Length: 119
View (spheres, rainbow, N blue to C red):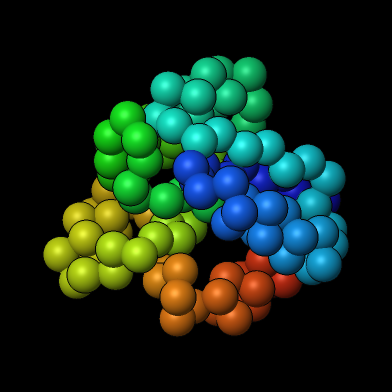
């Protein structure tokens, strides 16, 4: 069973993501942070296997968290954002993210990935 950290500031989306994750099953712990600072705190006391990361956070860009996540954990990083521009994707992959998904178009892909990683 894997643990997931959701870094997202939109409360309704967090609720929906948690529902989707529970439907997929196989995850023992779902944590949430809504800012970069909160995420840094959570990362100091947890070691998630999967991080679902938004890029547009109230206190900065989720891009700034990628090196921190990669240095402190072995987590699979899934960017889940509305900023699906090719430059964002290129920069994210250069920083070591594993998947880059659009919030509007790629919900099914997120479900597929979670199903794969839950087993």
